[in-house]
Image 1: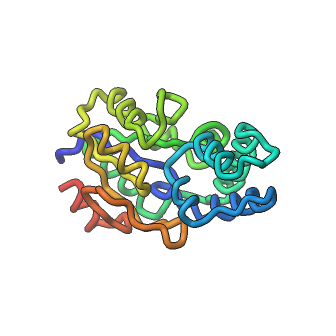
Image 2 (image 1 turned 45 degrees about the vertical axis):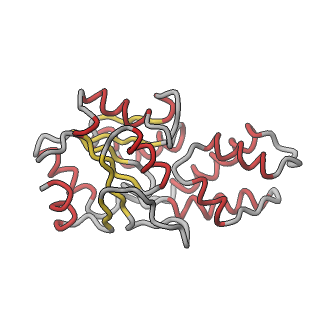
Length: 218
């Protein structure tokens, strides 16, 4: 097996959470008079809450809320969304077991931070089934910059060429490529209706089954 480390995005890759996020974010933003187009929603994918909230403030400069206040509401909506998740995407646990048995390290490498990540870690035992968790709080720059993936590789002592990134967003693919890593795009948990498949991935798959595992690791 050539891969030494697998770096997993969280939302839409190991948990099917994004459909809940959009429902909760629509409820929050529409409640304050912000109506986001599909294009603007797509720009949120794979980016941080602070960056997204700052963009909303640019789009709606007359909003009475500051970017920081928007960020707090945005994060609260995301937290409500993730708390509706009841487990890992089917097949993820089996893949992790097979990779671990083969000596492959596994990291969560996510832009999610704070209460959302704390909840997911406790409720889904992420700290028990992954070797490390890297977030936007651990690095200077969030995706689409490569910092999160490079930090995960550093913790494992792995070269970028020996890492495989599991992503579902365009920002994530850009970050992986900027890190010099191969990237597999998972399309089995689409969170935003009409969102295009990210471009630039080395592989595309839609379920965690034996055929996809063999394609990526054998």
